Amino acid sequence: MRLPRPVEAVIFDMDGLIVDTEAVFRDVMMKASLARGVELPLDVFLAMVGLPHDSSRHIALAHFGADFDYDPWIAHAWELARARLEAGAPVKAGVGELLDRLDAVGLPRAIATSSRRETVESHLGPPGLLARFQAVVAAGDYVRGKPHPDPFLTAAARLGVPPTACLALEDSHNGVRAAAAAGMMTVMVPDLLPATEEMRGLCVAVCADLHGVAALLVG
Image (tube, rainbow, N blue to C red; front, side, top):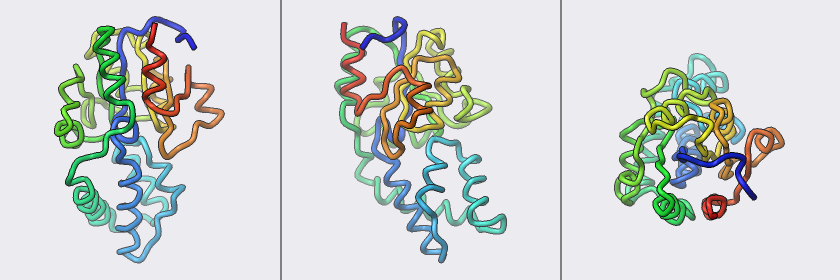
């Protein structure tokens, strides 16, 4: 298929798109919940995917109750996650091929994530991926997180490219909503969440993996 406009830059989400971490976060948050004698249903976790910390906290407290001891719970979950990811965050299929393709055609790229900058560095630094991005936009770099467009608009501004000339890559529903609201050509690469009718309406394409995204940029 042909993209609707020429691409001048590519904006990447991170968790669930570049690194296979969403399933890890799902498992450790459920484990931390059981350790406190409560249950975190899958649908509640999925509602948090792609959101900034404060929004996820709101969803958790709406489920567990306003008196739930949130901070020790999330700290325990992060401790479990760090242990699981000590050997490094698994890189998703097609990342290297796509970055090589972007190098070949001279397209700049940025990260736009709800994660903190130190998390970006710990996930992307060891496999040598961090240096392949010209900009990183992380939690604290924008006022409103996803599904608001601020992370993507900030990333486009840092690259000096109009949002409408950017290709945005996302795996989450909230991320797709944010990228589409920014006016970007949006491609969903589903991870834990499927491509719903709403998502297909917001996207210019849905790809099974990043190999498929690389194919979009051929020619």
